[in-house]
Length: 165
Image 1 (cartoon, helix red, strand yellow):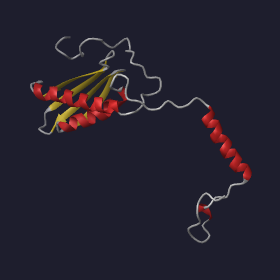
Image 2 (tube, one colour):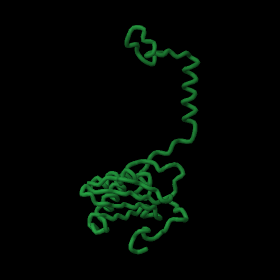
Image 3 (cartoon, rainbow, N blue to C red):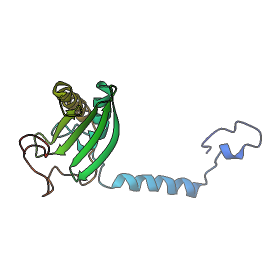
Image 4 (tube, rainbow, N blue to C red):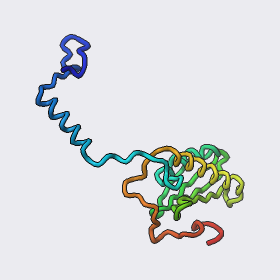
């Protein structure tokens, strides 16, 4: 049995001849792989959003507002802070927090040196959420072992830098 065609004279690398023993071993290995527990198929996010989609959603959300990601920090498990800069050289911050279902992920943005660009900040939050929910509709996976349980250090109320705190 040939696994490929010989495309040039003396091209032994392009053609493989398997012995009966090798063929039986390969087939047995494939059958063993299928004998285990069936793999879980990718599904849309159970609550409509996935924590693993935060990065790509921030990337596209800030692009809608012509902003660049300058720095990223993960202050604690379940809290990410993105430092941004607009095309007009205005600083911005987008804080993403994991919260209890059904909301699951909350964002808070500030734009401008003194946070004065509230309309743009709310638009940035909406844009991020729109992408997050769009990616959540696509079949996919969370990281193995991921749970929406909140670490004890995370607040369940308003974001840490919101006026409520």
